[in-house]
Amino acid sequence: MKTKFAATLLASVALTGCDMMGPPIATIECATTQTECINVWFDEKFEEELEFSPIRQTALGRKTNYDKIDDLSIEATREQIAWWEQAVADMEGNFDYDELSADAKLSYDMFKFRAASAVRAGEFFEQGYILHQMNGAHTALPSFLLSQHVVDTESDMEAFIARLAATGTAMDQLLSQAQANAEVGTRPPRFSYDAVIEESQGLITGVPFDSAEDGAEPSALWTGVEGHLAKLVADGTITQERADELREEARTALVDQMAPAYQRIADWFTEDRPNSDEEAQGATTLPGGDAFYAFMLNQMTTTDLSADEIHDLGLAEVARIRAEMETIMATTGFEGTLEEFFVFTREDPQFFFSQDEAGAQDYIDRATMHIDELTARLPEFFGRLPKAPLEVRRVEPFREQDGAAQHYRPGTPDGSRPGIYYAHLSDMSAMPIPPLEAIAYHEGNPGHHMQVSIAQELEGVPKFRSQGGFISAYGEGWALYSEALAKEMGGYADPYSDFGRLQSEMWRAIRLVVDTGIHAKGWSEDEAVAYCLENSPNPETVARSEVRRYFVLPGQATSYKIGMIRIQELRAKAEEELGDDFDIRGFHDTVLGGGAVPLSILEKQIDNWIASVKAR
Image (cartoon, rainbow, N blue to C red):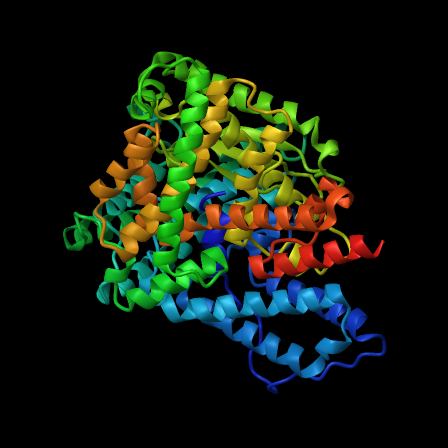
């Protein structure tokens, strides 16, 4: 899933409108069982927290607070932490854990986990890279407005314009945090500065920021404005006269309120650029960096594995996968070493679509075809199936990067907006065909789309579990497990695609080595890129883009393989203990049927399922 917008902003969501004062513990009257009462309380708390984030409300398909975006100030983030602390105190003071049902205990544990994560993250405000090239909020917020703010009515359009204007305030808040962190020595690497400057300038280039009379093309946001207005007029919802008025209001919001804030970002990053590291440094070089990186590994893997343990696991996995790659290479009839086969698949024209718009569309069509074929076989392996539709789309031009990671953005719980699998297709030489099939399964079905959609559609569990957010080790672990599962489901008929599956898994094993190498062992960017190229056929464009991702998102890349391995271990345990009674659909439904959880809680869920099958 990479760096989704929800993940970017959940860490900064505001709590404005919530009175944090009052008694330390709110007394809760409960006339029913503890389980029934706490489930009501959980849903109340979910709605309470959701009120703090208009962006999350929209992401869930609601049109409440539709004209607002989140308060992204550091003060708002501290208020959210205080809210979590108070909520946990209320829960612990009012509910008897021993009196709860097994599923309610799971919810109790999950609520404490989410609270502890938020509180612990608050200790590392100064270590965060606020704006960077990995779908930072400066590009993610415009993308959110274009893809998730639905305009059906005049008031929806007025809300859209209000949000365009409010984007300026949000950018100023984020710039203030970036400046504060820079003062204590926390700056992203220079390549990230360059990306933020270019992306910020790109968002305020074109009409209405520049004159069409001078040959300027419409900007992405202006195209969105014109599209919404044209539809409202065509539907008879507003008159052309009202459309003209709204167009001018949108122009004012963009030119007078949003653009100056983005220019301030570009100006400050340009001014401060000489203070950034030309040679990127790992997280442990930051103030308090050792503790910060240990925290990030814990958060991303939901385990207590150390950097050294993760590094060694990665080395072992790289060696194992190389051996499997050699086996598949032999089936293709290629004569040469594995390294030579890497070069062959990295450079031979047969492994790439054409370097043009037609090639980009071919990529989207091929990914859609693979997803559709496997989706037809889902009922053989799953009892629970997603209801939400899925689309494969090209990333918007203002945030598209050569060789950047593909990613998924969830739809709405009611299916009114589809889940979207986004691909960066600006450089088709960085998008080889062999791993395409595995990536499609990872981002689509049975990967992220299936896992997230099923969670959102769950009934009978508290909403904070079904709609409460993403846990990297679980979500990315499931998506990588899905790549391997797809082979059991009939995928990868072509040996080069099967090699691409291993190429994809190898990349996640490499991440264990490279992420810890960068942040705990002092590896340079070039050393990390060289290791990637030695052990994978991915082109250098992809390798460098990925390595730069690891520099600005410490620990995140370790979550995939750690999560996959744990899910595979739990499946092997269930198969061994249940023998002929093992049901693959039951196992998958158990993994997906409780929402996103840390790996320790997932193990409890599988243990309970094994016990229940034995009891039957």
